[in-house]
Length: 238
Image (cartoon, rainbow, N blue to C red; front, side):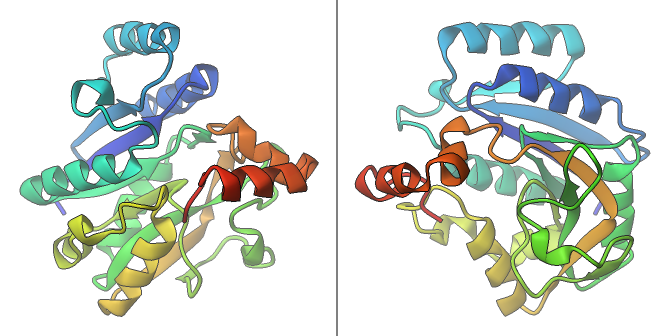
């Protein structure tokens, strides 16, 4: 693994996203890297804000409206495109979602941790709330703080590094295009291919659950409405 390709997919929620971006750009990275935000049909106003921020802060920006007319979410297109690019560069694909804020050492430590483990398919940072307590989607890791261990459950892509060896071993073109999100499937495929997925509870990142998809807050405030939307409108297919 010679470098990192860091990506952040986003649709609106630009204030949260810019916090994510600024934290990544402030990272203490020794390894060469590129950083690209994938704008998945944000509103015209939010697209303009992203374009201005990209010019000001110096990160890459891809407006998916330039690549496809498929409606959001286009996570599969992003994963397929970035996988090919990472393989060509012998780079790790590091996904940091737009409701996550990393610490200055997080990304380099994930790179170092994955590199030190030849069987690593995915290296994931644990998520915490504003008080530093482990939160969704890693609630099952409570009591394991400060550790690094193989994760038998799936890894979320909140802040996860997919290694080049795994990217070469599993072709994302075979993923189910009817789904919206793929962290569960990809995590399981890594295990099937003989890799281990490591959870780094020693590397907490601040996560505001569903900050990038506010409608999902209904799962906690109005669960019946959430599941009605999920099943009647086909939203949030995992």
